[in-house]
Amino acid sequence: MTEHTRTDAAASTDPAERAATPRPNEASPEPPVPHGHRHAHAETTRLPYWLAIVFALACGALTAAQSRINGELARAIDDPYSAATITFGSGLVILLFALGVWRPGRRGLANVTAALRDRRLAWWMVLGGLAGAWFVTTQGLSVGIIGVALFTVAIVAGQTLGGVVFDLIGLGPGGRRPLTPTRVGGAALALVAVSWAVSAQLARDMPLVLMLLPFVAGVGAGWQQAVNGRVRSIAESALTATVVNFAVGTVALVTVMLVHAASAGWPESLPGEWWLYAGGAVGCIFIAGQAVLVRIVGVLVLALCGVAGQLAAALSLDLLLPTAGGSVDVATIGGTVLALVAVMIAGVRWSRRRHVAVAPTAAAAAHAAPPP
View 1 (tube, rainbow, N blue to C red):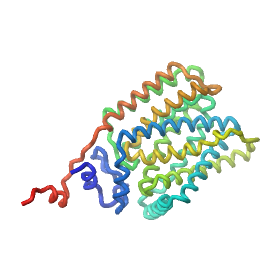
View 2: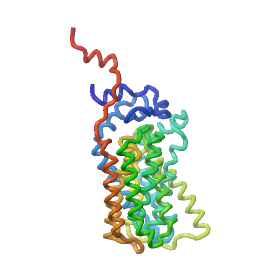
View 3: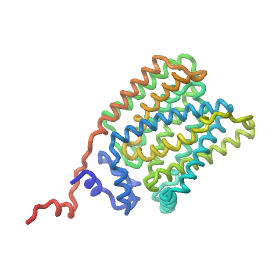
View 4: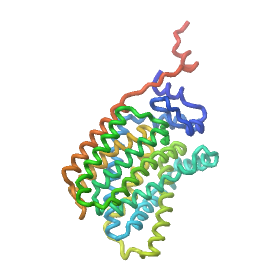
């Protein structure tokens, strides 16, 4: 019997019950799948683990790139709230266009609506965009002052702590993932790496609040990945989950922008560089990717795998295109290297194939039995 057959044999026949109460005793619990859609689920789970890691690294690099783009846009217009709204709003326009030509995405919206009505999906699970809105707002508030590298390691600290908690309670679509020595060691080492990397900046009286903002955003990013993964599982479409994420975030940011503009006024002009408006497109890619990957690797491992891509891209940007207040020193580089080691440690156990021993079904037993 193959691993895929064993997994399907262990799957619950009630997806609503599976979504609400993932089984804690399984090493890698199967995510909830709407009844009658096993084929679509099978196609998703065939993604090799190592390839999921590669995609997670790429998503991390795109996160750092968006941080720099949004930070530069906020500096250019001197308004982080309008910059965040432009980023989310442009991403939503792109996604709505894609939704208009992609039927599975529209069908996914109907699935999500039905799940909310039947209470198979909690209402707060569609609010992941609020965390994304806060994330891009902190990019505009912090990146231009503390630099992409320091911003990224603060994000990593929040994602690491959030990933541990969210995996333990089973918030992600893959259910509960128990703490193992490698996962605990990787998470702890990542936190040590973050502390080392920011130590030099703290010694130079870097504003503490500008580091706490991305830390909180990192915790929110882990929560966002988990709930977006839940929405994606119900919708059976990463596009649907991403549209819901951007729609909620855009509404929140437009509200904040209008309140801010009423007291501080609107930006006097918009910059002419086209790349300053690419943050929304970049966000569409990595938000959709994370919604798919979180079911395969879990919240914590996704966050730690993203560390490598984030820090590598962040350091490259700070070295090649430094900001006015940002710099790269030995502590930042050393902390980055240590964070990469933490990712390797945390990912070792999960790269092995796991087998769940279950009783074979009657059909499978009859097929395996020797002929009389």
